[in-house]
Image 1 (cartoon, helix red, strand yellow):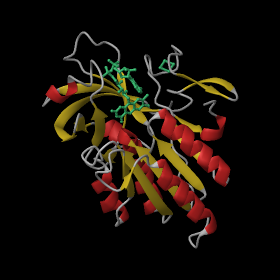
Image 2 (cartoon, rainbow, N blue to C red; image 1 turned 135 degrees about the vertical axis):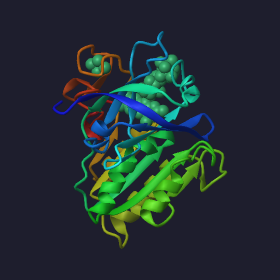
Image 3 (cartoon, helix red, strand yellow; image 1 turned 135 degrees about the horizontal axis):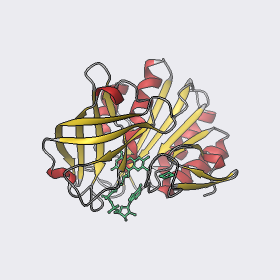
Image 4 (cartoon, rainbow, N blue to C red; image 1 turned 180 degrees about the horizontal axis):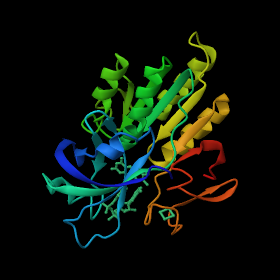
Length: 263
Ligand SMILES: Cc1cc2nc3c(=O)[nH]c(=O)nc-3n(C[C@H](O)[C@H](O)[C@H](O)COP(=O)(O)OP(=O)(O)OC[C@H]3O[C@@H](n4cnc5c(N)ncnc54)[C@H](O)[C@@H]3O)c2cc1C
Ligand code: FES
């Protein structure tokens, strides 16, 4: 956990980007300068005095030179439903927390469901920058909830493959059918086999993609976003069942080899 910073980060903007979805932009030079793909920050909002426990959020994008990081968050409960009201002021961050995605593959398939597309963006940036071939599949409930699509499109120079549950954009239904096709074509088509799959999103999506990757013989990593309390490995509230026993998502993860997770 070397390099963990405790930083008071100024809120630069907090913009609604979709239904119940917001991008919070923070001035956090220490963490923005050291964060790596897949890592997260543990955030406390001093103005919400009744909520003493920090909340974990992945870093969506960062600008190390400007000292800025973006978080894509979804309103789900007591803290995240109040966060849209923060227009200025400060939050307290501990970070960067956790391990990172494996970014060494020369041909990778990235699969993001809902806000799970956010923690994969920096990984995709790193893969593209190192010259790897990257395919991206995104899924969301509706077109309006597909809020990461344009950033991925700008990065890839082409549209990621998309599916929406209600069919308002891309393939109608779950994005797992696109993943199945990609893995089949990647394995038997002209592009050569994938060396790596990374997936983040709802547990059923990650479980299905893990199974598809295993069937195709492709290594797969998942980000296990368990509920967390301490965020530093002390309370065991975030354990994940693995073939090696219980592991803590905050310090042993959040990235795990999909074949090691007991689904
Ligand atoms: C490593 C990590 C990275 C994360 N990255 C993001 C992110 O980039 N964007 C984002 O929007 N959220 C992310 N989350 C989830 C986020 O931490 C929770 O949504 C947040 O803590 C909820 O706080 P709350 O007070 O609003 O909800 P609470 O009032 O505490 O809970 C409300 C509801 O949300 C559910 N919930 C709480 N925590 C989680 C969780 N970790 N996973 C699934 N459901 C949960 C509860 O079961 C409950 O049903 C991440 C979680 C982890 C562990
Ligand atoms: S949150 Fe306390 S051990 Fe992981």
